[in-house]
Length: 404
Image 1 (cartoon, one colour):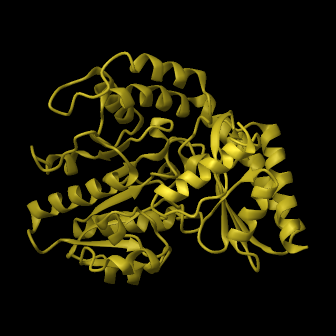
Image 2 (image 1 turned 180 degrees about the vertical axis):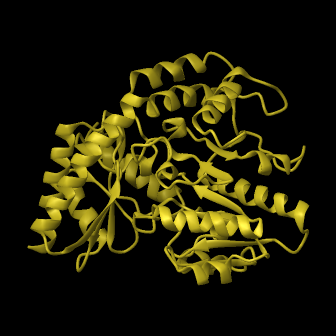
Image 3 (image 1 turned 30 degrees about the horizontal axis):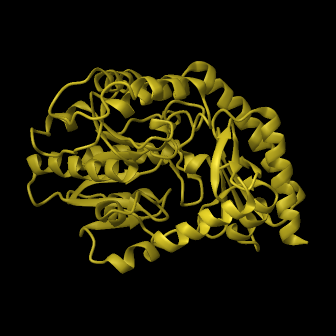
């Protein structure tokens, strides 16, 4: 394609799409591995992975073959009937998650959060109807944009235009003290929802000690613990699930982003006590868990959670973390580097995340912000060692461009 065709795509989009996103002036047409191709001929290193979605990068041969094969069968059948790929995907997820007993499939992360909140309310309704309906969430958390998910998302700029939201939600800080936990998580709380590693909140992991304190307090008041692993789960940290490093299990876990390899799917895993509270008709979806996407997700899940892939994530992730820390030594505008596996946040003092991501774009590197002053580095899990070297070099050049 030509530069004029590139501009035409941008102009057409701006004319007909609601202006709900601040898009880079970039029209994408393809990619391979961890690299993307623009309509104007540019080749860019992707450190966003479609916001942690494209775990296997672009053009994975097995995923392409799975899509082609699945397209010759059922695209959709509704949840009124059984299909093999859905049953297989459910079993794969349960086999990977020993504490879970059942799965619900939906279409997105936001839908997975909505279902998780409903399932928790259904559980406590059986215990103390109308008395245990509240939720506890965390400052800087992000769980989605629908009304329920937004209600447990703390950022006021997201919330205020849509008030009133779901009532009875309390926000506290990560790593707060025991007294705050006891005062906030009481007998009126149906569930506590937390990301094992906050994504949009600045790549902030919770400590094993804090996770264990949450688990104990939830058990004391018979509230459910919900983990949002939509961004940090499925191999992103070098473990199958991010919460494996915390030493405790949730009652409910929401998944989405990487599960479909780029196709839209979400899932909710629940343990036995939560599953027993749910009855026919309590929740549903028309498109969730359709046979086409589940067939592809089976291939994605098997590849992303294989021992070989997890070892690769740990190895390349350690190299990436070391490179980012080296940048922290070179540039005094970097105040912190934190993360695990291939999920990293670089915190800046002075330059904003937007300034850094814009400069990185000029260097042919795609990054995404995480709040005002943190840049997320979340490349495809298949990123290679040479690509990591390129990433560090281009990010260093971008920082130099901003501070010079």
